[in-house]
Amino acid sequence: MGKSALSGRDNWETVSGKKALGAEQDLYEVFTKEFEGTKYKLHKKPKHLKKLYASVVLDDEVIKQIFNPDIDLDNKLWGVEPDFAIENTETGKILFGEIKRQDGWVEGKNPSAGRGNAHERLCKLFTPGLLKAYRQIGGIDAEEVLPFWVVFQGDITRDPKRVREITFWFDKYYMNFFMWRPGMSGEKLIEHFNKYLKNYLD
Image 1 (cartoon, rainbow, N blue to C red):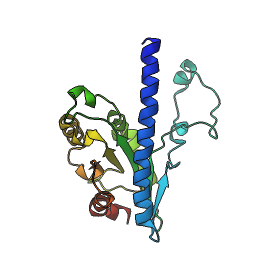
Image 2 (cartoon, rainbow, N blue to C red):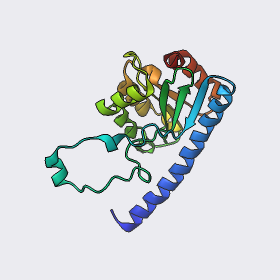
Image 3 (cartoon, rainbow, N blue to C red):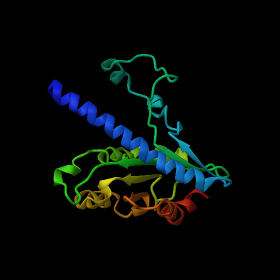
């Protein structure tokens, strides 16, 4: 990739980061207000999984083949850091969450407008290791629900290809994602949580 292309990508990532931060702040504000005076607590960028990978034990033969520095747990991210987490402070159960904001193919745009990969990065949550860790740490072990919630924002929530793609991925776990479409109120987000996910924290 050439220097000009990389420069363009850096600018795109900066803009994307600003949009994502705005998306997160909206969700944070909605749930902070909703949970005020209740047993539920919203964590911003929860640290529960920050050191997750550091505990992975590798075979001696693998250790010989890789770079093996001392692990500095205080200064490095050796795990994952979700965008948010909702905790029932009485039961200690936690639902981890991700916010994925992305452009999409909508009126007046070409299909290529939906080429971003923010939604694809959530696929790591479906891996056996992370599913197990999220269930153990969060305490949500019911098989009919996933131990995480993904909230989508932006034009991706109206993109005819991406909406079908995401719906296909989640399959029967439709409770575990929410399309927070442009113009949709915070009440709709809360309604989804209350209807489908809240009881798994009790």
